[in-house]
Image (cartoon, rainbow, N blue to C red; front, top):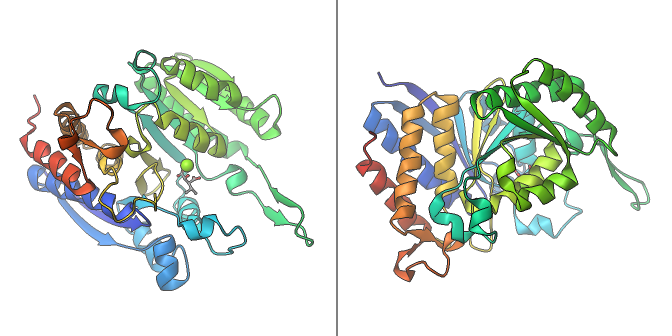
Amino acid sequence: MGIKKHILVIPGDGIGPEVTTWGKAVLENIAEEYGHEFTFDGALMGHAAIEVTGSPLPDDTLAKAKASDAILFGAIGHIKYDNDPSAKVRPEQGLLKIRKELGLYANLRPIMLFDELLDASSLKPEILKGTDILFFRELTGDVYFGEKKRSEDGNTGSDLMIYHRYEVERIAVKAYEAAMLRSKRLCSVDKANVLETSRLWREVVQEVAKRYPEVETEHMFIDNAAMQLVKNPKKFDVVLTANLFGDILTDEASQIAGSMGMLASASIGDGTGFFEPIHGSAHDIAGQNKANPLASILSVALMLEISFGLTEEAKRITDAIDKTLKAGYRTGDIADAHTDPAKILGTKQMGQKVLQYLKETVLN
Ligand code: IPM
Ligand code: MG
């Protein structure tokens, strides 16, 4: 029996619209094939929304988001603001606000490694092979949302790093639940040797750990974790960490998967789930048919699995990507010296290839 779902597509800025087109196309294909009924709506966010409405998150977008069953998002940001620290209205505020408003406190970032891409990474293949990490990044607290201040003379700025017990506990529970379904190893990353928020974090994680005696817990300082991640990524399974540490660590971890263009993420909480590539708006290549659509397509696989419980359909998508890569097709970001130049594809051609394999792939 097919299911009925309403999906909001927010393409956002830069390469967002180009890559999201393919995420949506894959959703349409899956719906058709499996007899599901997916209806779609679109909305603005980020720079694209500022240009039209003056706000990075218009009320209309938020209302549509709340009324949908899942959200597919592209990317956010514009170079114009990056070089203007005094801008009061910024595209990123839209993303932060929607995370807060929808209560998306857990950001899941799986580091999925396709064997074909071992050579695309700047790290040695033998270090990478077999790596499978699931990051749980806290998403609605930390310095991201603490009070921001600038002194009257403009010479002092501060961001309050703040965590409440309940915020740490709810994401810790989500991470432990996931660890129970994986290899039962969890590494909590903090800076408890310096930060009070991290001491609270560690205390709460230790308490939650007692409820999951089967899970082997390790606590690691962020600086050490950043080093271990490139030294021996295989040692990690579920990684639980705060908002800012998770932001930085997952960009670093994207190199394990070969490129930022390969990583998808799911932001979940108590309501509508939000799915997006971890890459940014990449204005330098926007509109040039160069962006890698695979992270958007993988985000769709996460949506099907996590929000709709459609595991088979999700697997079908990752299999199609696997086949595409095995056949040698690459976008520029994941191409290497061995890539056949004739198989280096643009965004559109890569999207079409995945669709082609999706239609051909039969699950056994
Ligand atoms: C991410 C991004 C965002 C973040 C930016 C665009 C606000 O880097 O999702 O990782 O810092 O959370
Ligand atoms: Mg980031």
